[in-house]
Image (cartoon, rainbow, N blue to C red; front, side, top):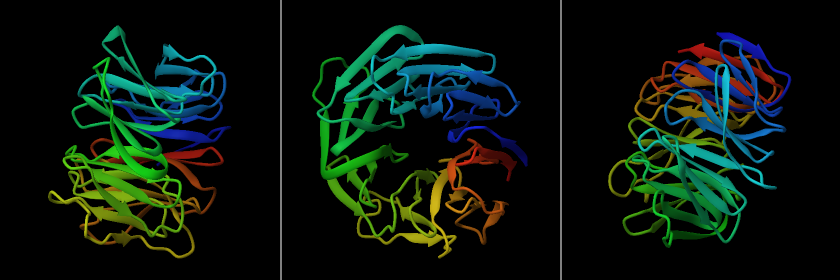
Length: 321
């Protein structure tokens, strides 16, 4: 395992084609090679891998959206007086979506002239593309709004559920939308009929979730172990119970990561430890067994062969599984 000690909290850990990349609260982007780019005048608030698979796109509290590769940083967009709170990208469509205040903006990584802006009634807290990269979900207070990414004039599909929705994602088959809520639960909708799914029982807020095993399982943080919801068949988790692995009554799961096409998942704990497992197999494999500051960022490579982690104090690592 390769370890790092940064002088700021890590906002995100990601893998591009070349290796692990970390985005930090001091506005910098750090590469596994040791290279460093100063890209924001303030903190990085969100990050995702660029649609090309080369480098990462970061949004900051300076209102800038920046594409960073080793040795190069390109300003993609800038908002006036608004933080960029969430960003997502689609390798399939080449599109990038980001939120600033109540606005969801869409860029085309292959066409600098393309831009769409979609307005919401309340602040947009999370964004996600469907598997084909044609549709975008935006989480907001009262539910999630769905937009066709390239259509300029349109009325969104509104998936309503009372409360504050903080993050959003599509199932890997595009049949469901799931949000993480302020009040310690997940909510979901089956898109063909907008039927609601309530996934509760968590002792704390769900900070991250990830699909794995070709979309058959949804792993989430927010409990003493990783909670796994079944997404098999047309009904997904409706009427079914979740399972839990890695239960430890002394701490909580802070972060989860997975590669959707594979069966492995990784977990970062509030007590600083990191493990990975295959739910179909047996036992946990600890990558970081020493306790410390809470894990704030976690990523698994697309081939599920490596994981990257970082904690609240700026300590980070990259390990092969």
